[in-house]
Image 1 (spheres, one colour):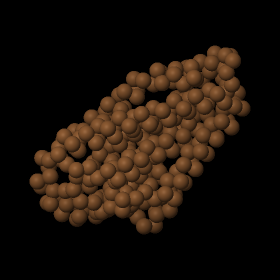
Image 2 (tube, helix red, strand yellow):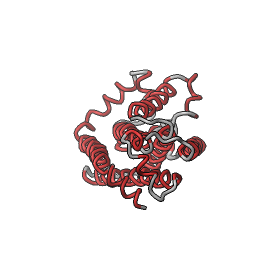
Image 3 (tube, one colour):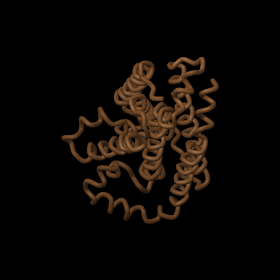
Length: 262
């Protein structure tokens, strides 16, 4: 597991920055809730009259004055976007960076098979994402206690579980793409995550774009649906896991046969 530990060590600064930033923003948002809760009735009326904007972010289905509704809208967007971007960065750089930094040939001269390289790099990505989500969940749960609000445990776990799967799916898709590129793919990874996010917004606004829910992972991690229905769409989640598996399979098929640039 030497390569696994090397990947964890190499990514530790990025991991700490992204985890700290997401957790801090969630904590700040939750600390603001008691102060802004007094004017929530007026805000709910305002949001109800904002048309497509309200529908895009699911604010037409949630009560902004309820702590879980507030958490789903404000904190949910922070975790889905921030976590999605971090997952994309981890996945898109995993294999491509070896050729970009001219270390691939040196790495593969060691008595280690390519599939082992792929497996340990993938394992490092999954470990970092799971650890980040555990830390963020702990900070979020503590923030409810700090402000004296009751945590709806079922909805909280479903919401964070969906975000975790979302991040894993994006990371695995980008991991598969990483096997094809030889230079930095940061732009491609972040662009893909942003595209998937905006596809979900478009799906929420237009009934004619409902089919997009089968493409974007943000559909099964829709906070408004999870909080209002106390459930996750398991069919869409299973489809997301299938896309993740395809990304992983693509990485193995391509990288084990790839001509590595010296």
